Image 1 (tube, rainbow, N blue to C red):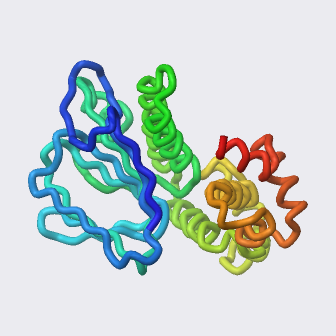
Image 2 (cartoon, rainbow, N blue to C red; image 1 turned 180 degrees about the vertical axis):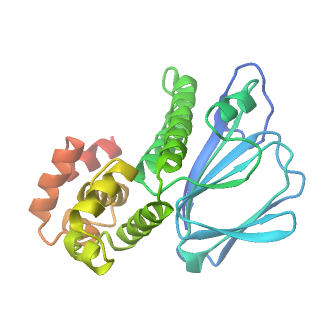
Length: 284
């Protein structure tokens, strides 16, 4: 199991603090590979708010005594003192990001972004921007540079803004079938990003014209299908570069590039650094 967590003042205790409108107290990620089960059971809930993002696989949540299977592309929001019961299973290859937060104006902030009390689970779309914001929060809370508490709030609010934009975009889509088709495509791309994917063939296999698919995919996700696939490959390359177990050639093959030189050029074009330079910066 891969885990990377961070806590305000290195404390794992949940707190209620109204000294500021919004305060991020902890955040992290879990990715199950071999561990069979990771359960959580808090019958009295917590004093703070918790937002979880299912980035891959699925998770099993329990609300009012009923189990609800939450798949990738969904978020779950718990409010203070709400019972929390959920499990992740290794066989599902679950990847989850989470953040705890408190403050004197949290409820109004959530409401302003469309995160109202009427539901716990909401679909937010698949994309790497959420993971990037969570990862940025983890890093800020681990390094504690100047003004890091403010940066934490900025990153969390960017997640709220992205959610709000997504909610508004979906509400404007007249045909729910369009949203369903794009969601299927993003799920497929996330599961097969390291394979050779032909957008034209994918559209044809799903009885869509290529132009219609690309146009609606970009409107729905903000990027073209190939840009979306590239972002997944680069994101996973970044994660692998943090592990010295793999060399550049191996990472190139893992994420779907047969030619490591081509991978290095693409990576540098996107990130501004070669894979070797990126890895060196991480270790310094």
